[in-house]
Image 1 (cartoon, one colour):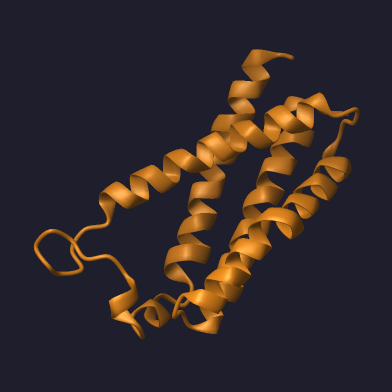
Image 2: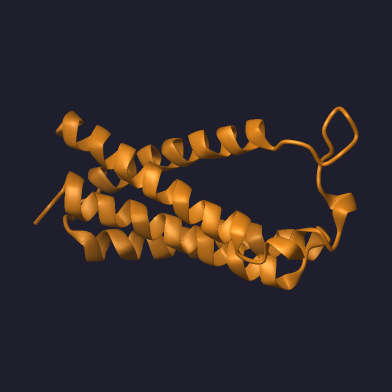
Length: 139
C-alpha cells in the first residue's frame, strides 16, 4: 500500500466528511434538537453551554473511521469507486442504519433528525469510498 496516498485519502475524506457532518448532524433540522432538551447533555454549569469537546472528539472519530474504511477497502480485491460505493452501502445497511433506527426507538428525538443522521452516515461512507477510488486506488 502506498502510505502517502493512504494518508492523503484519510486526510481529504476526513476533512470533507467533517463538513458534511456539520450539515447533516448540526445544521439541518437544528431546531428539532431543541424539542426535547432533556435528552441532551448539560455542561458543568448546568446550561447547554459549549459542545467544543464533543465536536472535537467526533471530528477525530471521523478520521479514525475514514482510516478504518480505507484500510478494509484496500485489503479487498477491487479497485475504483463503484466497488467501494457498494462496500459503503453495505456498511451503511449493516452498521449505521440499525444504530440510527435503534436511536429512534429508544431516544426521544424528532423523526427528521433520524432521517438526517441516516443520510449523514450514507454521505460520510460515500465520501470514504470516493477517496478510496480516486486517491488511494485510482483505476
